[in-house]
Image 1 (cartoon, rainbow, N blue to C red):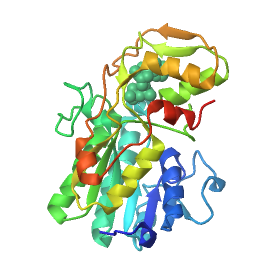
Image 2: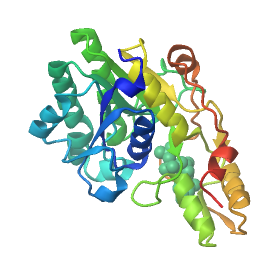
Image 3: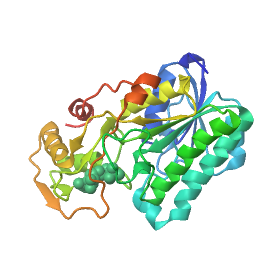
Length: 305
Ligand code: UDP
């Protein structure tokens, strides 16, 4: 275990992406040595701080991954195809990147004795049987994406059990914040933000009574940094805030924070939509020392309006 962030050498896969770029910045601010591995399909090298070393590669490139893991203490594995819809269209493509490449990474981490922090997801719980969702909730994903994340979440635990590898799986709930775009998979907050800023209607699916646990990317970065140092390895942790917000309430708050008068429209519900999702974060609080600081309104104010 490395106790001081300033003395660690970290590899961030997907380091040019939404969460990865925030993590990279924070690691550099703490004085860590950072290598970003990213295929730069949706980003350019200038998105990556010059103090970080850049390896432009795909996580499926085993040889490059092997070299990249050679001299680091911890790998934050954030590279993924982050789209439920794309995983339904192309389950094999999603599995190859999200699951196969992660298993490969775990195997390389075993070879080089590197701690692995993986990005798991609340998608592994599917339609929850109860809320708040704790880590003991049944794993019953309802999309290829959720199945891929469940697979790597379990492999992370198993690699600790079988081989003593230091692994931590963070089950992210609905992450939002600066840098997230409404593109292929932006999440509802970035979609509503773009709609409100353009003065277009804010499009709520269904009646808006469905709920989510929105967690700001700066709190997610804190969780990642805690995972790099925790003694509680071989474990999975929910990373949310424990606060539940309806999509109708979210639409209202975004309208207020952006000071627009966009109309809020209600359309057909999204087929298979999860009704209610909110994290029980006691385990992360007690074992990681995770303490999410930003309320949704304060979090939205960091990048809206
Ligand atoms: N949503 C919505 N309008 C949109 C996009 C999403 O009302 O334009 C709703 C969606 O139906 C869901 C919630 O927002 O109930 C969160 O959707 P997102 O895709 O961000 O996350 P997930 O469903 O994977 O938790």
